[in-house]
Image (cartoon, rainbow over all chains, first blue to last red):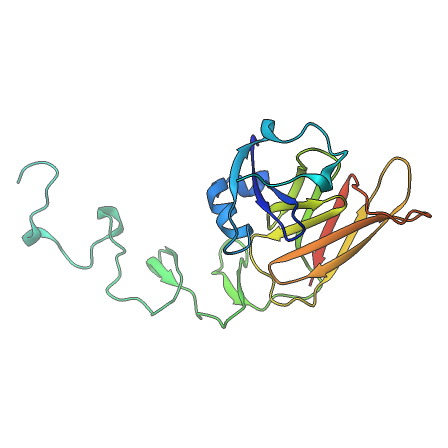
Length: 65
Length: 169
């Protein structure tokens, strides 16, 4: 698993969706995004290397368009 | 006749299995087709199309499967994940497409197939090295949100690992 899905949440933060390896055996990450991101919310699929290095300030993360 | 083409005038109906057909002249609407036996022919239908919500269950070798009502008390979804990792890592799962990390100690388990009702029982165990944690849930048929917080004087939300979750119905 090298990619995750991100989208903004209602608290001005960001949600990070990690696909299950089990699901990736039968679905693409695009299909998982279409299913698990709330309808009408913009999202991005990014490489995990683009995430911050640690979770110390996890709730301060922001979604950048 | 050139190779790769079939002269329609030579086709014998029903088309046999050996020629890519089913060997059958008709089919029951909505019925599931299974392999046949020497007595039933190449294909056979199961006895019933079932009713909404039932699942197709094996009756073992030598018997056709049947649609049956799900028994209660079974685990409909489960997952084991590391909620302190960045991103979250999923060690194992069943009927789960993904985990949404909503923030510190706030995770959503997204189900592959929706559960029949939102009145299932959600259970989770979670741990952390330095303190005891507790968990709360928000249940829907398509997902379950898990909230983890410290059971100490701070009572703050906290990331945890491993988080082991199951939805029982």
